[in-house]
Amino acid sequence: MIINKDKCVGCANCVPVCSVGAIFIGADGLAEINRDTCVECHNCHRSLSPEHLPPALTRLIRRILKSVSLRFQPDPDVCPTDAFAPEDLEWPRIVRRAFSDPMVTHESTGVHGRGTEEVKTNDVSGRIKHGEVGLVVEFGRPGIGTYFRDVEEVTTALAKEKITFEAGNPVTQLMTDKTTGQIREDLLDEKVLSCIVEVTVKLEDTAAILGSLKQMSKTVKTVISIGASTVCDKDGSDPLRDILQNEGFGIGWAKVNLGLGRVANRYVSAGEA
Ligand code: SF4
Ligand code: SF4
Image (cartoon, rainbow, N blue to C red; front, side):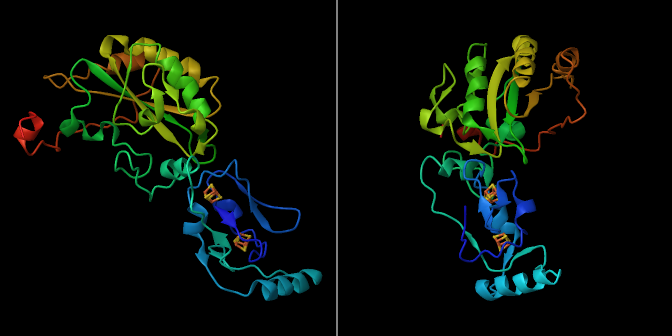
């Protein structure tokens, strides 16, 4: 994202709407974007309505009013001079937008936002089977974001455990080697608002891997949120519950998928079509 300095009048309306604090008012009194911090989420461009006041006249009026301790301030939800100029992003920077702008679809998965349906479609996809646990490790959040270099620190450590990276996950698809968890070199300095790594583990290995993740979360330079899911036993009991409690994870955010998703074509599901 670029701010056109020829148009900007320095009203600062855009500063609080940036999801990662990348916009600031520079020494010249006009808005700037820290290019390294910006995750190309397009929130600034989307959330401020463009108005078309003449920049030179608006600056003059602001300067005159300021000299008599008055202020011309546009409504807080507008950019008065339509100063935002979205760029045509190229690789590797375009990856920032793919992970950070919820209005953009991941080319690799066809899913908006972070690009994965996670376990939400497990009834149909069958990614996680009885005796397995699906772990989602979410890196970053609005306000902080994450660099792929920090994600790789965890994926390379995870790869040494008994895990399988989910093949249909967009971060897995950025790996050069799924057995080592290494991510493409040209992406390591790219920053995104958040991304999700998905792994499948055996139920009996879950406690050890959760313990490792807890340790890693203390040193990695962003926030990590962990989600765990499994398939209930036939009597409806949840074999994951005790494991999570023993590892000190709360289960207050639990969701139960009631099985409303069904495979509509049994021939497709059986691989016969
Ligand atoms: S809202 Fe528009 S005019 Fe105001 S500081 Fe930001 S870019 Fe400049
Ligand atoms: S695109 Fe997103 S991160 Fe970049 S300046 Fe705009 S709001 Fe901030």
